[in-house]
Image 1 (cartoon, helix red, strand yellow):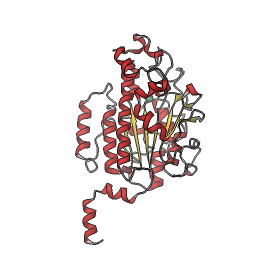
Image 2 (cartoon, rainbow, N blue to C red):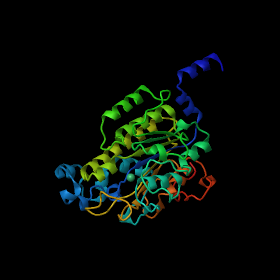
Image 3 (cartoon, helix red, strand yellow):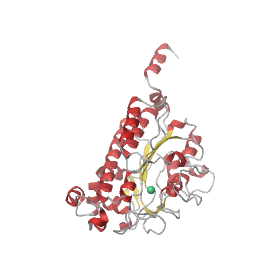
Image 4 (cartoon, rainbow, N blue to C red):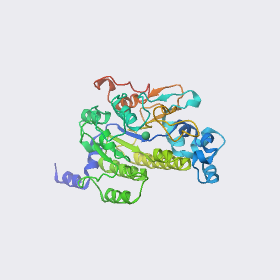
Length: 365
Ligand SMILES: [Zn+2]
């Protein structure tokens, strides 16, 4: 290396060098916990909002002003304008039951841990029967992708609001980088901004002890993306589930609206970075549905019809620009193989019997 090159290398941060050296595809997986097809595809649902004792809405007039519109398309756009205007046209959106679409979980439980394990391992795992903080022996698509691409752990990263993602991310501790709940970031990998965010998240009290607020999960993961050039980055958000269980329908819609703001910031960041622009696929989905009725929209699990019903969006350079594709059905198990295809890997090489990728979701770039 000549002296000039050595000087240039000193001036560039390691992440910038890595980005220049690595032309591979990036995948960003995003989950919104327990978001129903009703809100995702139709926005404000009058079945829920009709009676205050069912909805828990504090100020219906305000809510209607913000989110009531005459058609389902306009209502969902009021809740998630960036997603529907700017992301959906650049990919495929599956699962709208009003148009005959069906995306379903295949596990028998309809709650979080079985859903995340199905999503990450490519099949329903019958031994995952509780939300306990347990590490399971099933290899996840995250650890497989890291092995296959030969990456350092910090370039396959998961930022989760719920602390249990420490256990659910991989079958072996340390197999991928995880920052979940109120975890501290390693001193050699954090920036002053990340350090400040982890101080603040502890003072911004979320409803439950085991989860931080999604705003911090999003901001930390975005900072990670800018500094560490992950090839696979998973944002696992949680606010929507806590607010639904708390029967605050108004705040569920507000939380979705806030997550849409995060998607806008994420996409601006992707478009601004040469390592990510034109090479990045977003996969957006959920871990389970919830009940359809005014009483049980808050709930989910065995015996609550609707828990099996979910939605899935794949947005990126390998995906046809089609928007809603109601005719294509998919399962939660198909997300893992889809992620591999969007990374440019062949899902068939992953040992074991895994569900195939969503048809046509990620072809050649
Ligand atoms: Zn959940």
